[in-house]
Amino acid sequence: MSVKHSLLALLERGPAYGYQLRAAFESATGNTWPLNIGQVYTTLNRLERDELVEALPENDSGQRPYRITDTGRRHLAGWFASPVQAADRPRDELTIKLALAVTTPGVDVTDVIQRQRGATLRLLQEYTRLKSAEEHAELAWRLVLESMIFRAEAEIRWLDHTEAVVARAELPAPFPFAVGEPDPAEATPELNRSRTN
Image (cartoon, rainbow, N blue to C red; front, side, top):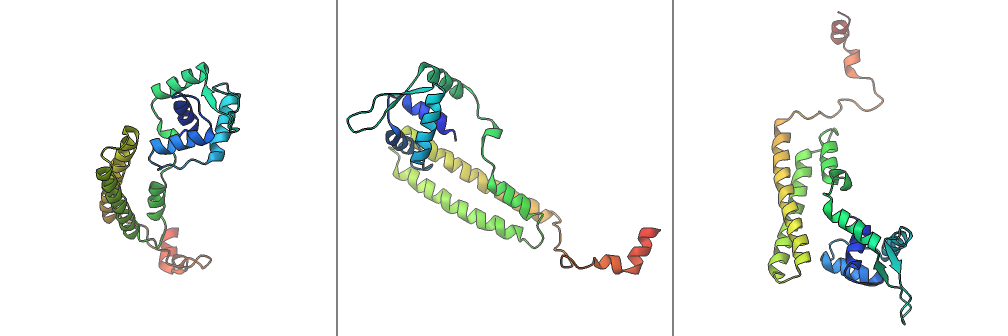
């Protein structure tokens, strides 16, 4: 997620100060991605440095609003016009976890998959409940919620596929000896003779 571009998009609606921007962001995303206020102000400082926003005079409450500049508008338009690249997305922890599980001796990969599937199913049920309860919600929040539903459904399908692949695969057996002990194969004369022949 690009906090920089999110703030620029929110400032395109009109000038706002940090707490207003955080509230608007969390409202638009249904509070699914909490935004730290320190991160908001740090990002605003960088945007100001890069001349993408400008600070306005403090209001009577001592809050300093920001507004987007023409340079910021051009930058934001470029962001909206550019597809999100796979390299821009964070690493998928579940994929990494399963890739390591199938190569780590002693891990019950099927159990890992089943636990994840159960958790994702519960999450999908919660998203579906939210969708039916909030059918008149803002369009931005509905889009975020539907995206989470589609991702949960895709994850469940992928877990089903992965479980079938794992069931057919020959996973590495646990090490037959403790780390530091000699390999039993090295002590077997028949194996040693076959290696020298």
